[in-house]
Length: 375
Image 1 (spheres, rainbow, N blue to C red):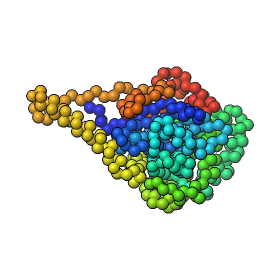
Image 2: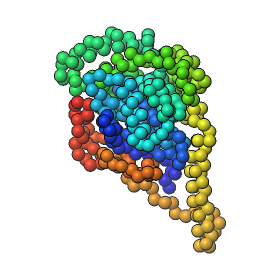
Image 3: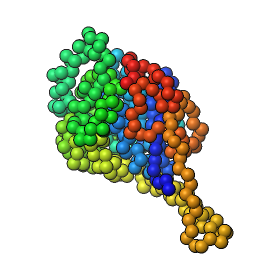
């Protein structure tokens, strides 16, 4: 029998008018549930950062995650990567998907984008969940890397056309740290290789230039900060300073490193659920859960009534319904009718890396992404 709680995200390409096209992952969640907008870190993709927590989050919330510009299948980054552009892209995506308000959940660089969403688009935010991030990275290993190595690397990329095709895994693996499982490590490198090194260098420079020190104290939506206590990229002390700077922010400390999303997914999921529960009002969560429980209860009552009408002994179970069809990816540009249950729609399972250069739905060559062939 299939698990009624199992959740698979749907993925598709979504056009943001005047901005470009990006890949979006969605889980419908219970009816009436709050929306979480998940924002990934530098060199990552939405799939790499969030695929292992889609299912637990989607049992309580509607979940949406997009590739940021320049990353994976995201909008082209242009000559300069700007965090502000990423924040504006997310706000535009919410408009296209008809999401009036949402909780921004940002990881590392994504946490800075989430902060900028509050500064630039406060009316669309109902809450903030900030993971492994800070108000700035002054004095951190990231800033030292940017000061010592990135200027030389950036110049080399400009002058050497071959380096413009090199993937971001060269830089991203250092940010993730050691991954114990070889298969996971290989998949992570492949995902990061879908972003160019040039974009990654520009993004890290943008991170090093970010500061919310002068305005983060004005945040007036519920907020939570997840602190990775053994973080060697964004020091835990900087993460705690962020929490102290936001009025009323809850703190959720985890004994993990910066790559927690891959190295400790169960810890990550537990911390996220706890943090989101502190931000989303209980009635909003319970409404969706009660709707789902009501559907299951009505189904059970109907089954018992059918059994009784057929003269079957009490407690006789009816045959299990068949499981969902094989997962596929929706073609680019597919429009979903209002109220479509995304969890039941065609989908590509999270956590899988498609064959290089092929589209799972059509089996055709993917167009070049970010100025180079997709890997």
